Length: 137
Image (cartoon, rainbow, N blue to C red; front, side, top):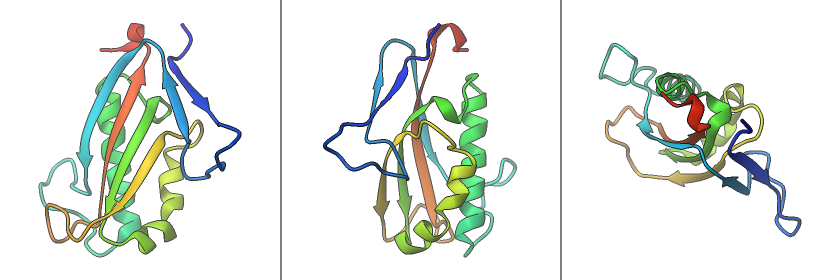
């Protein structure tokens, strides 16, 4: 079965290196992943306080765990919303994100916020994925 996700680049919109401008979905199962933060799998306390790169890595690891729980991976993600307390620092370490989101990038939004749920948190990402129906758990 063909993947239900298709990347579209409208010719009259600029090509973005951080995300796709348009993703279409036909069929498949939608997966909604709550905002992931830099909390480890064993601890409710955020890890890596003050280190945006390490927090972003932990956030992506946590998204990966959520995706694997439904037999999906990062290539199935169609949209992300990123909340950060420091947009400039996030952009400086965004290459960490591309170690996980490698091709057929999802659409995305980056939103600067004053604070997240814990004062040590610097970044939170929620995601939406679509997987072929025959691969859904």
